Length: 353
Image 1 (cartoon, rainbow, N blue to C red):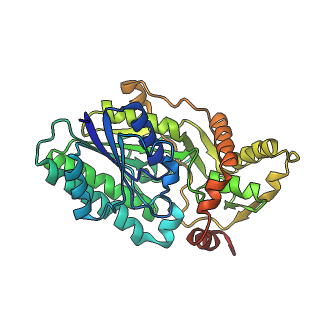
Image 2: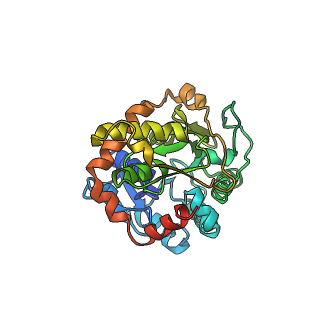
Image 3: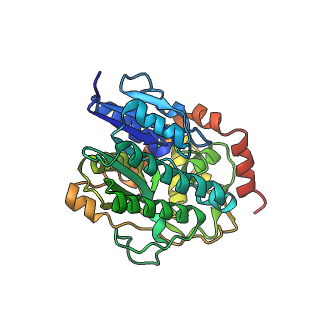
């Protein structure tokens, strides 16, 4: 079969990546979607078990830092598009393992860009390199204001610094080589299939097991929460309609302080588990704050709303309820990955603080 587009999705076995891959495979049978993922701790092919036999899906286990391997994928499938999601993405891990973030997020991105330019050989018609990034590159906000696409970069952690570096590389390749690129910066994602080091799945799992809920500092830090399916829809839209060399902010318009979010989560878990009102909240345990913890992130996504008629469809309460239901129905999924190195990491982060 001759496919209209042949798109690499890096990190396609991860949390956001798997939702993007599923959406593209199901919505565009005329596209070949190539999932490139090295399957580190957060990559899980179980996330895609429902579509992995479809004729327009392929999986390639390759490290994005492997120049020969990546170039071979471009050649094998005659690739004409890249959606780059592969990244080390947890701030806590970046504090304890910064070099891993520099290697994957900076070197890996540079390698993908270089391979794209080398393979496409300046014939950029019908080509696109789409880089998915984070709002954390903008630094931290006070009580007021929002991140705009034009907000100066001010990353505060090794993670956000590595993502800022990758953003700059993507823009530089666009400017220097004429490579068609787009970038999006998103707020905190949540939803099914998220690795349980992140706040919402971690706390759902801990509540089920009646383990402490470790809250950094006083829990006053504020985040904007974006349901992952809404994000996947926006990525699809930007890939097809975004303007080359442009940047788009994608936000959920759902600002919550950590403690308010956790209290809401506890209330919903009391209901769903048939526990007494307030029982889950008793598991909250305040721990020493994260080093350099940014106070507030909030995104202004009016550009994508005005130019492409996109807006988040999922309210936080509905999205949170759907997320809880998924984890409660898929306890085997979470237990399968909460073993070995993850347990060691969990102990190093939250015990004895």
